[in-house]
Image (cartoon, one colour):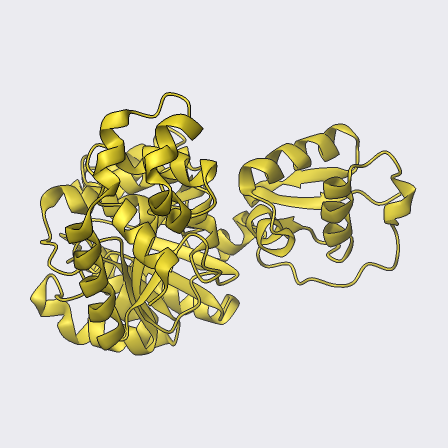
Length: 372
């Protein structure tokens, strides 16, 4: 049993610590294993650490519970991913409130080059069904490596998943409960197909009920692991609007499919567009163009040499070198993956390169090297 995974899972169960507190501790100490082994020293090594929490790390019952959870996962072909795992969704990892641990059953690449979440009302109309099917079919034709993410709920979610399966795209459902059950039960067959052509993902261990607050929390995973979020249909209020808001807070692109004026389940989408919180989307080609995903990468004929920029830092040289290989530019998430530089740091590097006249920012978070 992997000790680091065990102790990271146990860390999520320390009362009074919280996600942000747990993440701060992991940054201050070299891993969860070291954190538990030297918990008695925390009040001395970390200024301001509450002494009352030191005792919380002496938790044999919690460790036994976590060991049982990992045994359940192994028995049921569930992967337990921590932020240190290379298969953990890299886009999600850069979000401040990303889960420390994810449970995953499936075979899809959670770090696919193109990840799109499709969300919306549970009261999907015939119009919404048609939009889901058409969008996914077009995505398959334009970008056959796209991963479709949604929440396995009634309405837009399940239609997006089924459209992906029908079209031959991998699709991942983010759940609001443990992987020992499927909710709603009516979607069990689709969920089973998804584990063979996509996957099921959750931050919740087995035994967790699909409580209302869990659905709201899981929305951040749907938005955080995706390049773009598409709202197909939504009333004036709804969970998909929360997902859209989270996507905006994460500086991810958000799109909304317009509907007729007066249609109850298009009111939310129309409001997103009207208030500039989402880009109007009519088809997959519009998405691909807005994200600058439709431009093939071709080698640059040595138009720009890294040595021509002697004033660049080592990290700036690395980013310039990557952009030099793609004359049509690279999306910021692709740069993060290729360079292994955190997205918050990457944003600063790209800003500096813009100020130095080395790169140009394009739509959809794409950056291109300026030829000389």
